[in-house]
Image 1: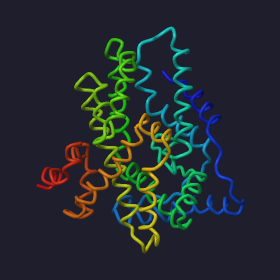
Image 2: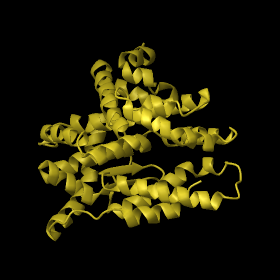
Image 3: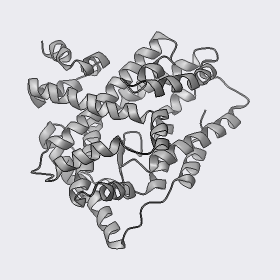
Amino acid sequence: MVDWSLAAATGAFLVRGGPSVPRTEARLAVSELRELTVDAEAHVRELTGLGEGLPLLPGEVVDRPGWVRSAAVGLEALTGKALNTLPANPLAPVLAGGAGVQTGVVLAFLASRVLGQYDPFGGDGGRLLLVAPNVVTAQHAMQVPGRDFRLWVCLHECTHRLQFTAVDWLRDYFADEVERLVGGLAEEQDGVADLFGRLPEAIREAKRAKADGGVAALTRLLRSPQQREVFDRLLALSTLLEGHADYVMDAVGPEVVPAVEMIRERFTARRSGGGLLDRLLRTLLGIDAKIRQYAQGSAFTKHVVGRVGMSGFNAVWTSPNTLPTRAEIADPESWVRRVHG
């Protein structure tokens, strides 16, 4: 379905270069990002109680083409098993090439915006990546202290790393759910072709949607109840993961990141900004919906921690059965009642 090598090459070719900064500043940003991941994860462990006994490892600092290539490898690992179950098609190489180019264009757009990422499917045991030119660009645009901002970004990504390394079943659960979602299309006659045929109208409806960022419109792309159930579980999980990380990066407090309140205020404003073309592309790619996920997941985490403490919140990591549903994300008290009685 996708030529991932072509996607990586296309994205790396198209992505814009980073900002022009003095060599000393660039070296400082790279070295601090690599080193601060160790400090950041120690702070995250202290706050969350996750990851005791795991090694404290530095992250990897990459440029934009490096992120594109890594993202393509991770996506191939995540989707490869499910996509290999699709029926044979004599036009497969042509279709895969076209999909690879399109995916590369999307990756090039995202590569100039992603600050960091933990990819549980990259490398042998996952990769924590920090995109140095984007971190420097954002820090300059917001005019916030460099070290504070770099540590703040590391706190978020290290939280993601702990989610997948400290919760031993989470990686396989996520991969299995993605396989069910993608593989379900193969079980329907012309499922993939039909999906793409209905995509333009769904995108137009998503652009008109306000309350949920178009999630409902995209959900209706999935015809079978089973696919919608899997999609709901994946959406609830990603909302939890992103919101938990957003909560943690602020909750460590000004003792660790002195400028945390200033950074959060300016970063939130930056997330919602951008020109007309940028906002359109963000809508088409679901980025606006993802921004809402941060807020919803963070509100869920804050409410639960306030009610039952961090150890009570950590019950979400017990098993797939204790993960919140989409409805519980919106009504965290219902999750507290279900799990804690």
